[in-house]
Image (cartoon, rainbow, N blue to C red):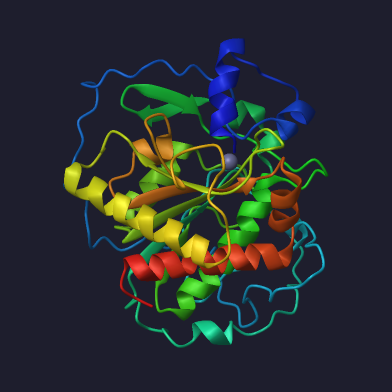
Length: 341
Ligand code: ZN
């Protein structure tokens, strides 16, 4: 998702493109970015800290062969043809209709969890981590749904969701975010965390950005990690970790988000990834225009893992090994923040 491009594109006004164009568009559909009135939102610091996530019957189907795939040097096929990876202890948040019901029934053979991540197992103590894989596979085919404006916090509105960006070779951001998210899910479960995903497959629509934030709030998440890929100029590369500039749940919660952001930045660098060479400062960037941050009352970061329009980043982001490397960095960051490894 190119929040950077989104801002630049704002001067061209609203662009409602055809499906094909939407697919290639930046993940954040153009929308007005008027400065929000600072008094139009009443932050609440009373978010529940012990609310159990909602289990949706029929979605959290246990599977004995559902670990994320091991690193592989070969390019990863689109995950839209795979059975959604669902762990027994995973709670899947509900997603809006329509749902794709034509998924293949045969999951790919999977390998056991990473042995190097077994050491800190159970140190998560069942605490809830919400993983938000940006976008969704059927967003482009449902412009009426995803273009509907929703609350984005602090008096702003945003499209429900967007199609996301893609590499120059056409590898979509939603496939990338799903690949990293499912790998991260396995790694965090191995550390003893309970994982809630904001979507349960890569071939559905949405959920809307405000609902994604609500999923984290309602789950009483100890940490929320939203995963995206940028679509910027070809020379830009590297990740950056974004937090809310306007402290939607008060200064104390904002400080927690800042702590999470710092730990994530450090862990990604320790995993061999480089901070952005053109946006933010040392891999960190506070934003006031992102619904997922503005509406969250939990410790939350939104991370652009790299620039899909940069050839080096694109190669990493579209490979199974690169996604595993990123997931390991993210898992280490969550573990560091929550004192679990
Ligand atoms: Zn995105």
